[in-house]
Length: 91
Length: 258
Image 1 (cartoon, chains in turn brown, cyan):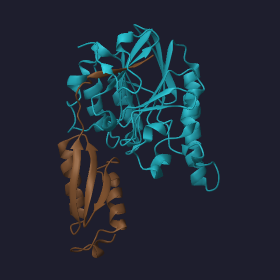
Image 2 (spheres, helix red, strand yellow):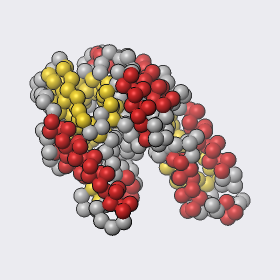
Image 3 (tube, one colour):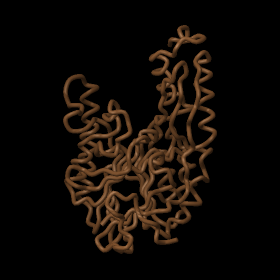
Image 4 (tube, chains in turn blue, orange):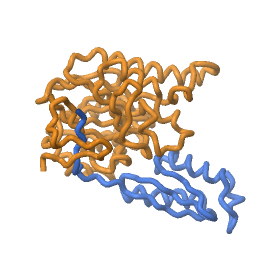
């Protein structure tokens, strides 16, 4: 872990990105493989889609808790679950 | 002969999701003869999560056929998960198949979870450390079981159901570096060893809906984050209503049942 390097305005380093990516999958409270971590200036942005608003909130909470000195924002959506409006014909 | 197939994968159910899919699932008999689930039904593969799947996808008016995904293996409770699903009337495939009598004919479905390994020219080989050999042999054995199951079914139309992808086409959008963890060409080779009409898979959340095996079999990635609806519906057959046939390059046609 490299938390000691990530204080204040210091840019997040690749090891932090890697740690977050693994946390997203390996933390039982998250267990998501479809979230992408993108570096933007001095912040990290989490992109992807999950099945419920609760999971979206939990992701941000767990990552912020583990990396309190890293600026993290979330742009995670909740996947729609409506019936389809089109069919695909496969002759 | 037209058989109507609904499919979705990667629904990752837990208590917080129960009920979200059900209103759409209640409409299934109007548009589909069967619902296929392409694995990753749960978040961690626990018996409790499987009960959520049973509640959401059990007791539907159409048969439900599934394979498991990697998430469904996480807590090493596969036997318990399978039992809960089967008790709810859901058919769980792993290296075997089922034939369903549909209005349009006999639909044969063969399924395996599948595994990674990569695609032709850029794949792992059965060579070197025991761990690497075990990895590739797991893929080979899974694909062999899928091929044997596909070739064994006596039916009018054949569908392959996997969690991992049989082709790279439907992975477009995922980082190239992780393709070997998303599927393997051996699954495609197994699908091409039988007269398969359609192959359905999940697993690649950032992938693409449509692809084709080297042998010309249509492949569809139905991972929920990809299709962004409760399920996709495919009407497969040789006597479709030409007014409804999708134009080439089109995204589909309007549903005919509304």
